[in-house]
View 1 (cartoon, rainbow, N blue to C red):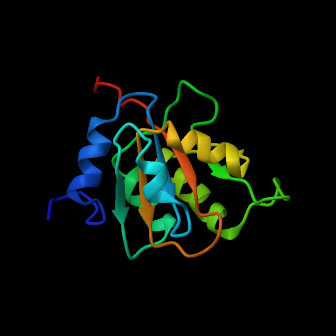
View 2 (cartoon, one colour; view 1 turned 120 degrees about the horizontal axis):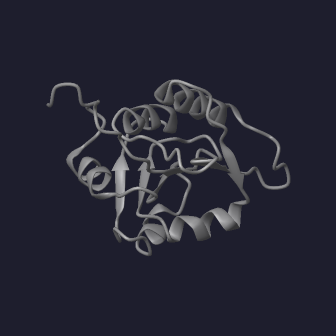
Length: 150
């Protein structure tokens, strides 16, 4: 255990988060997402796991150590519900609240059509799979920077 580090952040996830640079993207996905096959095409090349929790808890842990990009208007996206792109499901609302809390302000979450989401995921730095069983618990987070202390 480490002080002030969420215990959900295992060594593999922490290493990936530390290795990512400004503008790199990570995929946080539910249990139904084809995590292994998509992850093989990412920069990291293998799936990472935060098992036993949903995307809300995993997002909270990740965003406790990773800033979202402020150089872009939208630094987080959700997978759209097929045929209902404006439908924001409870799992997505929960992650939105975690984003707002971590950033200390409201950050608009964008949306990406399902198959376009898979294309984005294949180009991401890494895929982090969770135990989330609710549909559409899939997100893209773009890494930001941490300003030097004044």
